[in-house]
Length: 384
Image (tube, rainbow, N blue to C red):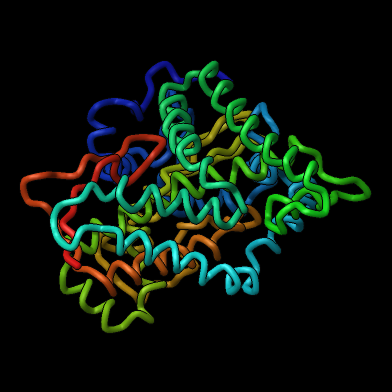
């Protein structure tokens, strides 16, 4: 592929990173299929992103040089692993995990001071994601801080596009997980009956899945959990802090929470983008792309497309949920969506039930930058 001589935009420019959502809105309106040296081809319109999701034969998920199970696979290989993964997020498993998740949410909210300012991302959002992920997977609490540091290093290496650093980050995670797997094998029949142990018994065809495949599965789950869930919790808290009337409405009508959470996260996406590669030449919104073109699907723009949602900042609970790309669409739709929805409902429910969330007028949030979204710091006043 011959790259364009003059890129259409710079995703890492100060102007873009200062307000990613506004920058993506601008690109969607003036250059909906745009090229950059950092993200290659980016799709900003809802219809183009949706097309790429449903035409998986043309827009392949096999974009990484390292195994990515099953996110970085196409059918039929993808389907084999997807059948292994989906039962872990069944309705029965979610029902069994709900009391554990709720206890974590209650404990964190009740640990907040009775009144006063808190840095919400470190006080609640990050810890909630870490504790829920560890509880769901059966991981020890002494893994919390290493995973917190690992997530930050992963963000920094991704933004810098530092291949050596990304390799080091991946190797570090491999070490954590392979040590856990070795412990489970050593324990034999005394190993804890949790998700991590269960994965050791999974098969593809007539063989057990190997350690590298398990590590890849767990890396995908962990990146999604620690980055996206913590970002989501921060986005929800900040949005509600700006809207006391909506807080009260949701306290009085908690049945509205699932739709409200999805709508808030449509307005301000917790996950910025996802990658694809073309398997053949294709025309998209008048732009010709060759086979082998690297593509970035901009969720944070597509979910704000005026052609689908009208005013993208208007909060509405009557939208067609099929248009909301919060968890993707097509064969690669997020398998962990049931767990994410459970977690976000419970933490928001407990925050609303046990506190009033307020902005701190003289202390503004600091927005996170690509590949993250939401806030890196979020000062709030929590009144319990």
